[in-house]
Length: 330
Ligand code: SAM
Image (cartoon, rainbow, N blue to C red; front, top):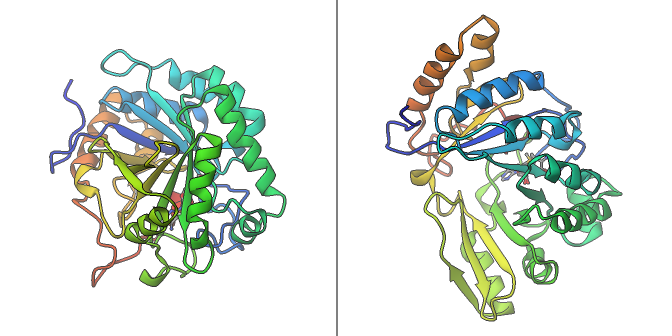
């Protein structure tokens, strides 16, 4: 069996599956606050069939996302079923979740027992008032903090906390997050804001870049870079005393498309080969018109072959995709 590889020579080993388009948060940089779910969700049995076919093509990591994945009833059983699959090397897939953490404190343990390996929790401020201003959810902060601590307690390691920095909202949180990483023993990752919002908020000036983040961290304590794998999205850093880990994901100022190993499945069963793709590829449509596993495998190969070389953020002629992050699955 030849493994998935695109025409630019990149091995595709990482699948992100959005299991619902619904979200219980309305983060200002992601959603307008007025729209709800816009796309349907498939029965878990259909996601499972797709994941099984993709694992048979060399996918090794499966990340469940959304929308907010923990809103989807049945996620624990789904994780158990994905964990029973075997990669081409005979291993359990590396299963992760990206969540806003609001419901995680009750679900971390059952998810871990079902076979979830890692959790990434999105949290854009370590200050409850700022957190509420960004998420537009007033009782969220304590829930998310409890979720992070529970994920750590049950060993969904490494627990990663993702923070999107926005000038005018939370750029003053960089050092606070570094302290949080040191105190809580979690990896904090700063993500540059990308033009993938429902509204029109993005402009280059709102992006807090990697260089700026490093400068702020260095003012707190001298920063030391850690080694990382090529396909890893984050550049990793710690401080001179080795306490705390901060990653910086810099798709805007330092794109890493050349090492991209990812494809995505939207909640309604479309494949996206890049966050910035202008087209969806309708895998579910083929499945529902009766395609066999072999036909679906062949289709996935054809789609992967068309994966874009890179994104064009910040270039003249950049076209914002019609689906925003929350409707793709970040
Ligand atoms: N609801 C889950 C959560 O909050 O993690 C999963 C979906 S959410 C869309 C996934 C991640 O995308 C979150 O960490 C969020 O902060 C990030 N995100 C959303 N819009 C973004 C943008 N325009 N640029 C960069 N990251 C973004």
